[in-house]
Image 1 (tube, rainbow, N blue to C red):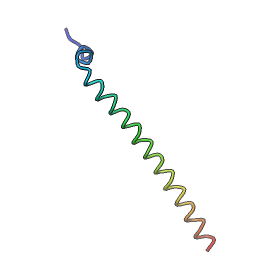
Image 2: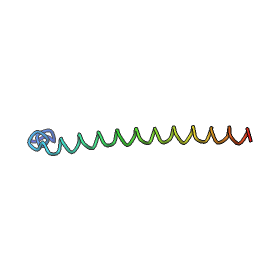
Image 3: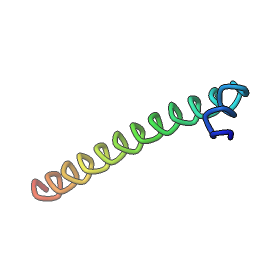
Length: 53
């Protein structure tokens, strides 16, 4: 009886792929959060400028 874990232990390339994928996902999530924050602060700045002029 084989479990999926047996396959992982035999083929380390799968491990490496998964690890890389997770790191990339984390980085892209961070980028999304950063770009959202920038967009929100840009909008606020724009609204403030509009009120002042």
